[in-house]
Length: 295
Length: 240
Image 1 (cartoon, rainbow over the protein chains, first blue to last red):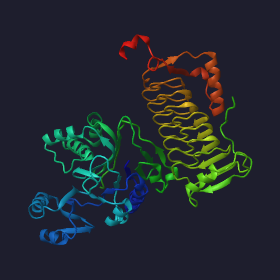
Image 2 (cartoon, rainbow over the protein chains, first blue to last red):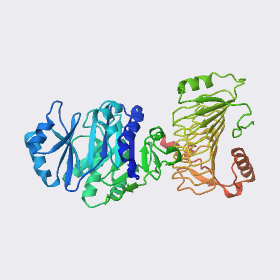
Image 3 (cartoon, one colour):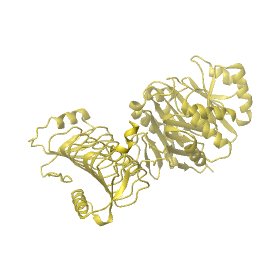
Image 4 (tube, chains in turn yellow, green):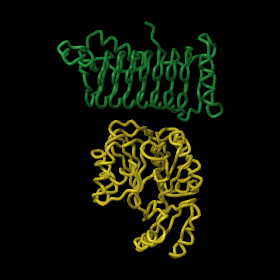
């Protein structure tokens, strides 16, 4: 099972509603994935700055940590988003590794924030305040675990590169082999999860200079198994299904947005859905939308 | 043989069932409890919102119109009802239909008409992968194209495709007949083109007429089983 909801806005006036729309889609997909949920959202960013999404055990004092670094932090349940000058990234990462090994760096990027946890999707969304978040695009997932344990680490999305995230419905059969190959390429992995390997593979291709659509095309030749992937980059949104296309996927496109749902039910309350172009993404075909950066 | 037509809305005012106000289970329980001679022969389902298993297991000869997109297994196990979906249908529309008819005015997702034993399934748009998988006597007419592995292990009945077919059409086919107007990306194992005799053209013309499809039977090619996979060959006896 598992459920995927993705929303990529073309019309910037919808940006304040992105979180609320995404939260509603995730809640509908509860019966496809009730054990954990997560989402990545691409919000505002400033030139020269970046964000680190962090996760720590309960009672960890993120504010004291941020004060020690003289940085701003936004608390969201057991996650926190630290905003820092991009030039200080290595320093901050070293500081965290040395002083706070209990703090996990969930994601990094100019705009992407990423939150995930165990529990019903509606609870996960409300714990992190998704409904009040705004942004240009968001990708969420409701998980019914098959390949690894029900833990926060095993929840989706997975992020293995800056502003990059991936969610997955399906299961990969050659992930151990690909993980070993990627480790030789100096990619690092936090879990034994198959989806993290898919994310790592795409990050490795992107790091090698491929564009997102090129990385997805080469994933078709490399990854074996069942998958419907939805991926995000700072300005892009991509969809790929394996050639057998066992896992469901429905898309809706209007002048205002592109939306992905594991089932049509997840799309039914989107604005203007009755006039949207509804289609099932074809097997083994790369779908990719890119947005012009704000001038 | 009596054949069902694509449903016409009955003259009587339909009974309106609004899924925004009443649970789906109540709809299905009500429809399944209708006696064969029920006076309530015309039903309209509002606000389907992609819900699964709408109007499944109906055994009364009634007409049901679903006003919107349906989810999985819509009109599954249908036995005698005429179901019209004014929208798209999710996975497994009319799966295991026994008789009656199902008409999808939009597109159908995967496995449309799976394992269906009888009746008529008409899809005005496209059907995705595995259309007619393991069909056992149903007639399926798709006015658009079908996805890969359509008519996989299809045992009997007819699959008529006015558009194109994806990879591996008719893989491991038994005795179902496939009529294709467009082209197939590839044929599956043991599926081969067969001659179109006058009898086949006349049978196809009747299928097209029942489906309300305007197409010339002369434009179609017929595919069927080469019967090399499922027949016992005495030459292979040594392998057993």
